[in-house]
Image (cartoon, rainbow, N blue to C red; front, side, top):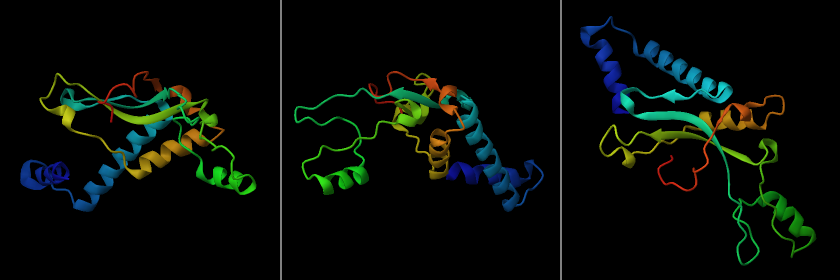
Length: 163
């Protein structure tokens, strides 16, 4: 959070007209909310300043593989599996297959431009809960078809640099 404090302290240092902290916070929240809505609703790809890379919502299809024991590399739906196993203890697990998106998985991603800044690959991007929840609501709402707005990123599970 030091960047946020530096931005605010620069504003009130005398170079610019002083702004109350509450007004600055409200402005910052509004800008972040608008960016979030643009990225989710319109598939906006945001080029970060100083050649730091790009942030956007990318979609990809997980490569489904079957293990030797007969399980798949998909997340298990614990609630449906438990209900099925109450009736039949030997029932196979129920997997999440993302039928509401046609099998696509989405992720808010920071694609780093590794040529710009030394050591940038060590940094990570973690989305806040409201961003993830907004994306989930948009994807599961049958009236909104936002999945078509997102960019396809084929190698998201083959590279380690996607955060």
